[in-house]
Length: 312
Ligand code: TXA
Ligand code: MG
Image 1 (cartoon, helix red, strand yellow):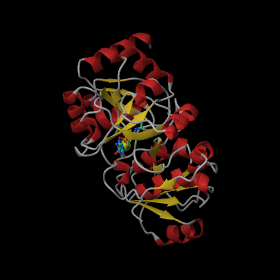
Image 2: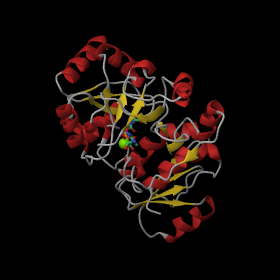
Image 3: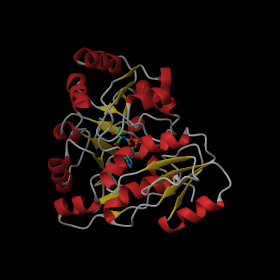
């Protein structure tokens, strides 16, 4: 592994692209200070140029060198949740160029906890720009095999790190102006943030395309997918005359061609979610039906991803 990481750092230094595991999802990394490398990253992802990428760094001190203002709330959240599945949006310093911020005056920063990026960041010694290692709009990868399926030869090296433990993307908190705002829910919940900050955290309207998770349809399988309540699932299965794949909490129904049963706890569900959506997408069915998860706050991040994966 050691020599793989050295090779990865050399590829990054030379302006190449390296996919790497994190605790949330796999990332596609480029040297965050190299304009041409980041341009190639956008081209491979087919990502619109005004969508900013997160800069990954090895420590809070390094993270804050990419920001020109570090409010007390940023220090508190960093202290509690870094390294970990949290991204902070702060006013950028001169280090964060337009090509990583999408021309905005803010920058997204994250210190990942997974040992592979920790070591890579230590050896590389500088910021790595990394969106999720999938093509724009599709389901994020949670294994190295997913990355290879999605990106093939477009990536110079894929570091192996096992299945991602969290399974969905980091919680994003905007601290760049005014009170803390939640831009993307994740494993760190709104309640977790409020406990540390001892104040309310508002959810910001994510319909703005400025952060890509903000696009309504995102994290999507190619097969049309629909969210249905537990109550309606049986009716919908009965009604549909097509081949159907189902993601549900309950036991398989024999009328259904392909059925995946999901854990009843949100952490376990999140961990399996993207691999499950990929599996259902290749099951050769015309429709995917997803049983809606509970309305409780601890399901907020899973609900968010499912709403974006589904058409209705
Ligand atoms: O868990 C994660 O965050 C993963 C792993 C690889 O770290 N990364 C990830 O990156 O999900 P990506 O690019 O797929 O999603 C990052 C989100 C995007 O919606 C992006 O627009 C938003 O963060 N973002 C980045 N910088 C921002 C900024 N300055 N202001 C608002 N949103 C920002
Ligand atoms: Mg993404």
